[in-house]
Image 1 (tube, rainbow, N blue to C red):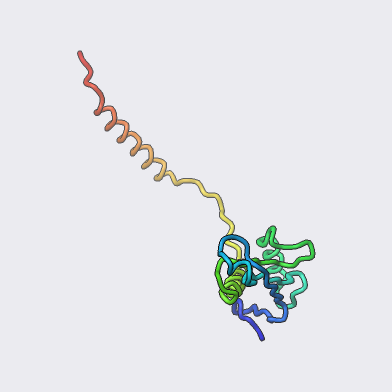
Image 2: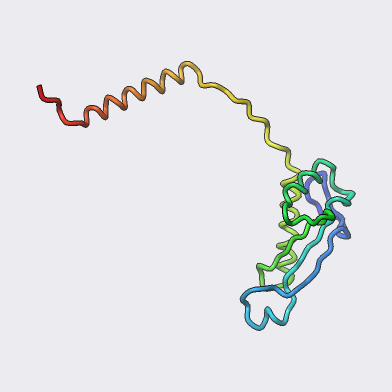
Length: 141
């Protein structure tokens, strides 16, 4: 079954591998008995559904979540139920892929202020300086 990510990218659910383990932290007896935490694994380097440019950006965005073999590991244990943690992990994976698939922002070209802008700035500085001088003590003559 295909999971839609963007208009052009869809993932096959066979590419995703889920492992369930016991969540750490507070939660009482439930945390010690039930395996609610989810580890979602996605092989970025060997995925046939990712374009090359998206693959490179995704590897850069993944950071420490990417193993040496190119497998993206997302751990989810925020919620009490296994199903909510599965949804959370899937949402985080899709968000990361969408961010990698987004076009890069346009290159900023440095500009200089116009002559009029420089003049307005200097006039405003002069006006403010005059106002502050008026706040001072009167000069005795």
